[in-house]
Length: 152
View 1 (cartoon, rainbow, N blue to C red):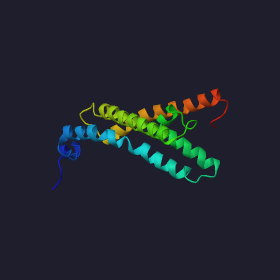
View 2 (cartoon, rainbow, N blue to C red):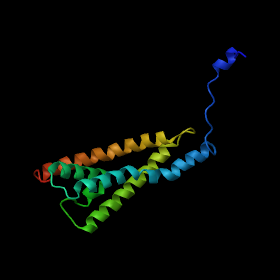
View 3 (cartoon, helix red, strand yellow):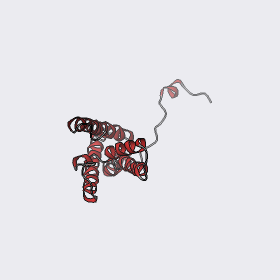
View 4 (cartoon, one colour):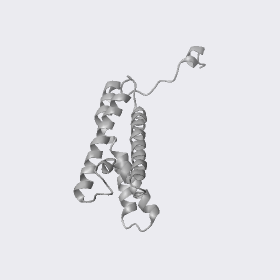
């Protein structure tokens, strides 16, 4: 049997969204803030692995860099110039709250359109994360200049 010309003009049917687009958007909004913690947590774990038993400058610098990208609150708390478990704990908790809030914002922005996806969420989160990371790098450079090359 030959297909009519009308059959060729139709786009292929898209797979239905499980439980509908509203439920999918609600899931992105509900889970997105927690998902936003995944990348910083991975950076933090990688940083700990690099810094544990580090004897080289390359591992130390890359471990510190990943630590402040994962937890920008460490800089606010004065790390690495101030030490102590309380300082680091407060910096990590503050950073987790920051990433959670950015996840909420990214989820809201990604689900403004009726047909939204996790790809939209990751795009929004990435733009927010890049802004935070640029701020971290600028603050490190400025503090390095002010403190007379004490950090790097």
